[in-house]
Image (cartoon, rainbow, N blue to C red; front, side):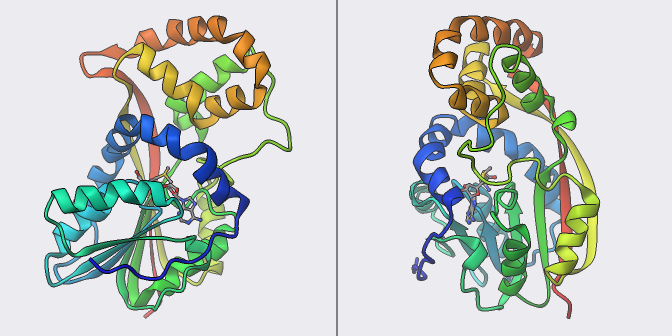
Length: 290
Ligand SMILES: C[S@@+](CC[C@H](N)C(=O)[O-])C[C@H]1O[C@@H](n2cnc3c(N)ncnc32)[C@H](O)[C@@H]1O
């Protein structure tokens, strides 16, 4: 596998991903990859990707979708996985090597300024675009990766109300702790920043796309192997994790009462497959004009 040059990071959000989120994502990889797969597996069978295609996977994280895409395009095609966190890509390269997949390359870079060469047939992103500091710049950069007529497909979360697996724990924590302040360090605009169909359509139009289509995807999501696992995940990541992290010492002092309140609610969702809650995303498909 060759390695393309990486683009330097320029964003405080990219720094936040690397400094704060990487260790938590690694710890809860089983929930993130396992859960997010419920959405991509509903989308994958109909993706406009053919054997021999050149594909880019934006914000590819641990690389599982990039590896699947590489298998799909076969040895005559290739996949570039790009993410701003080198630590995720080390897992991705190891998994690709273990699976004997040699037509995928993983590079570290900030997608918003990445020097793409406009030769890709398809650009994919599973929950990788909602954190762009400048969404139009990121979406335009993705379009610049595509040849004329190439297709972009991204999966993004719908609203927090449509995603109780993130909304309910935040609501519970907010009964005990104050909301994050204006100056809170964050991962970027956040998981729900592309929930509004009209706004995202406008962003895509400004970024130069046509043939824009949205499709709602609803899927159950395993939020923890056990209630304890689910609580650990919620205190570490997502909107509840942000409230907890920002509250600092106050959160620590109220740890036991918060855990008890979360346990009480999450226990209602225990199944034979772990703690399972509802989630909802958009599949957004758009074209680089021919
Ligand atoms: C919610 S994770 C999704 C990861 C992966 N696509 C998946 O579905 O498991 C979002 C990913 O986007 C990456 N990311 C965020 N902002 C980025 C940027 N500006 N450029 C490249 N990657 C970015 C993060 O490092 C993270 O891996």
